[in-house]
Amino acid sequence: MTPKPTVGPPPRVAEMSRQTNETQLSIRVNLDGSGKFSSTLGVPFFEHMLDLFSRHALMDLSIHGKGDLQIDAHHTVEDVGIVLGQAVRQALGGKAGIQRYGEAYVPMEEALVRCVLDLCNRPYLRYEVPVPKSKVGEFDVELAEEFFRAFAFNGGITMHVHLFYGSNLHHILEAAFKAVGRAFGKATSYDPRIVGVLSTKGKL
Image 1: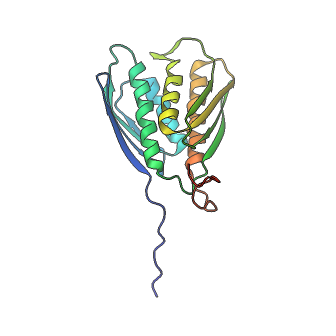
Image 2: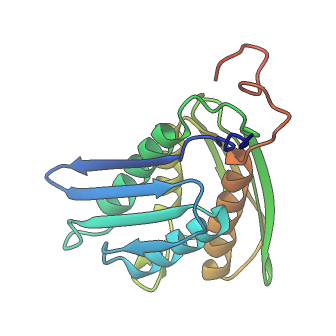
């Protein structure tokens, strides 16, 4: 008798878009990818951070569109967080079988950042990454918090990001994006022992 093929979980892929007077964005995510990244945003440092995020989450991420960069990058960065959070939330579906919680410590030379998160549908952000109001290249470093807040609140994620120490702004932000990526990748990964969702409520 020919054995029946093993049926795995459905692919966790989603596409979302946002069209406003400030931004026109389209995002596609594959939570079961290999960390491939592509973008046409035109915000080089932010795109570098998103590349790190997707690579360490092992999530394929494609972003196309533009924002009102003639003003600054604020609307673009925040709206990427909004659409990415919505896409991730859709891709996760009912969240059956996933670990739900994720944590990661990431060093980047003199900097050390920790991220702990919960895919619980109770959005919250605690961002303890004190940095001066400055720039890395043309990127305002304070926009990193705006991205993480928009991502957490639209993705239904409780997220705590904490800088232990560090002095180089590039290193600090790189460690933060990598830590969030690694924690997110762990939280979205499957554990065969989990039946349904990892909650006594039976629903997330």
